[in-house]
Image (cartoon, rainbow, N blue to C red; front, top):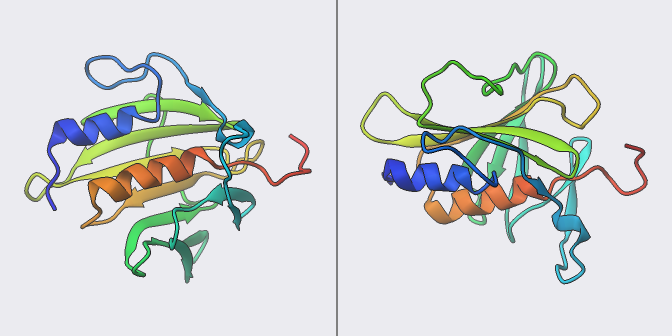
Length: 175
C-alpha cells in the first residue's frame, strides 16, 4: 500500500511534541503512558524492557549473528516490523542524521530517548519508518532499531508508534 509522503510525515510527528516545517525536531516531548490510571495497559516483557503490544501482536526472534533480531507480527502473524538490538546493531537514525530523510524527530518517553525518521524507498513512492533507541534499556550502550516492512498499513503504523511510546523498564528496576 502506498502512503502519501505528508501522511507518513504526520505519523512520525506523532512521536514528538513540536517539529519544524521540514520535520526536524525542535524539542523533546515527555510522554508517560504508564502513569495514567485511566489506562489499563497490559505490559509484556521484551528484551530487557516492558511494552504494550496491540491485541494479537507478538514478537518472533530470528537467528542473529551479533545482535538480537526478529520481527513484530500483527494479529494475523504477518511480519510488519523488523528489529535489531545489540551493541553491533548500529544507529539507523541519529539526532543529527545527515541522511536525506523526509522527516526526522526526537522524543523522550519513560526514560527512553528515541529518534524517528521517514525514508523514501528507491522504488516507487513507498516510505518506511525507522526508529532508533540509542540506549536500550536506558543507561546502556545498546542501540535498538525498528524498521517498518513493506505492506504495513496506516493503522498498523499508528499502533506501532503507540506501542513504542509505552516502553518502560520493568517495575522494581532501578533507573
